[in-house]
Length: 453
Ligand SMILES: [Mn+2]
Image (tube, rainbow, N blue to C red; front, side):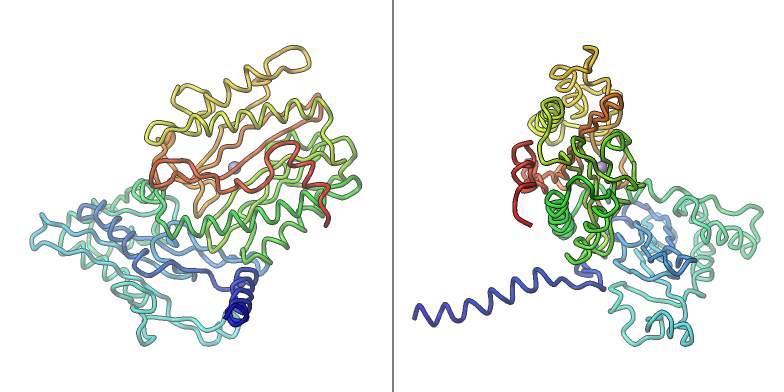
């Protein structure tokens, strides 16, 4: 019996491990259609009878630029193709006659010659298009102006309740066209749609947190590889390249931002991403690099000693930065704490907690408080974008995902230290560190550097 069960167990374990290791490379992992539909309905409710029009990101002009969908468009549709538009019309209880909720995905007409380059696409004439796209209605892109025009003719009030993404070129062209065809003097003025999508995107659903966790796990694996690979004589760029390869092996489609690998003086430049120097013994290297899994980002920074051991001074500063991160996490209270308060004006901000810790626990070479060398906010929201949109200062609530990343940068000492983890506020209000299993303490970093390749 035991043997029999073991024989059954081994292949299934093998299958699970293989499926974990060999994640699909090309296609994105979509959430169930119902998740995207629920977001559109939530947007519809926020429109109060208005109409939102979004456009997919344009295809990049250069062949070597990979396509990335517009974040709001992806959030509302899970649709990863260019050339599309989404219209969401909120139910208008006051209109005469009252109009119901409506959602339409507009798709470009298939171009069979271009499909030789792009692969097969779907359009409104494809059988089952609406079901396959998971939206109530699919129409050809050419129908968008007339559908919008008909809505405005039926209720002139709609012209004052249009919502589009600021700076979106197609929307900017569509509105004057609408005015001309309707015989109006001036084009309707659109409201900023991000005012409605940002509050929705700030709270992640369980499926989004699952994707963010996958992004975190894949990124931690790349960070572990980095910790073992850093040594004198290796270039910053080689580390970045090795990490990107590992991210992609782990099923991520790309890094969620240009990897920052900065050794020595470069460790003190916050967004250094030239990665052109060679690492030298005695320096530290700041590695801020993470990836995006099915459009959801992670954000991680570790600081490691190039020779495998921190000097006493590096260790001193490292411990203060780590202490600040821990103090901020320990002070967290859901529904009260805020994040991203770079001038420490809000006593409830985790920034204030971390700043106070650094101020009280470390000194510069001339006796000045170490907090003089911390020059950025403590963290930011993470989601489809690594710097996910937010209305700061955000009061942190269940479902929010954000970073805690204190840093100290002392150019005179060629010494920069940043430690960054991505956190989730759980349903019970507790803080969950998605990066918990990556080394944090100086001892653990040094031990991991010694581990066999
Ligand atoms: Mn960050």
